[in-house]
Image 1 (cartoon, rainbow, N blue to C red):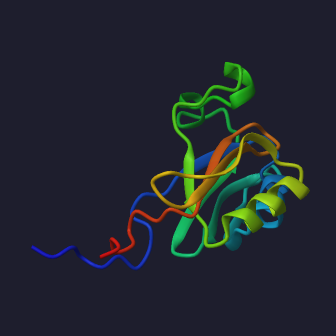
Image 2 (tube, helix red, strand yellow):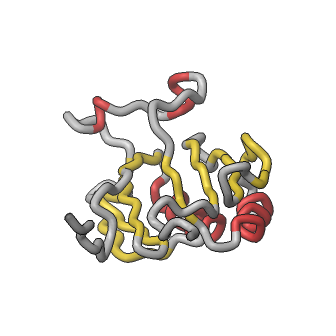
Amino acid sequence: MSTPQVSGSTIIPCLRYRDAHAAIEWLCKAFGFHKQAVYDDDNGGVAHAQLTYGSGMLMLGSVNDNDFGRRMVQPDQVDGRETQCACVIVKDCKAHYEQAKAAGATIIDDYAEKEYGGAGYSCRDPEGHLWWFGSYDPWAEPAK
């Protein structure tokens, strides 16, 4: 049985930000995301946004007091703990680390080469969401 080719993400993280417009700009500057779509809401916030990185995507919107919004909390409401973390594969992890650090990302785990291959680091964005970036690509063909 062969594995089907994927042309884009089939699992897409979705985050909420209090200042979604500022978060979008920061995520593009610090992490290298690109705006694919940004739809404003009637209150000056973001109803829905799609940011891409390679073949991956992140969706985000403004924090809202609606049915979906009440199911989520912001990191500062739970002492910075998370139940999940976006993991993004980058080609040049060291350069990405330096770019994120220069943009003000709070580094949690410094850049390090990994025994299993590749390198990685973790950080928080300005609203406290936890991110992991690394060069190990589990989709790549194993070395022969």
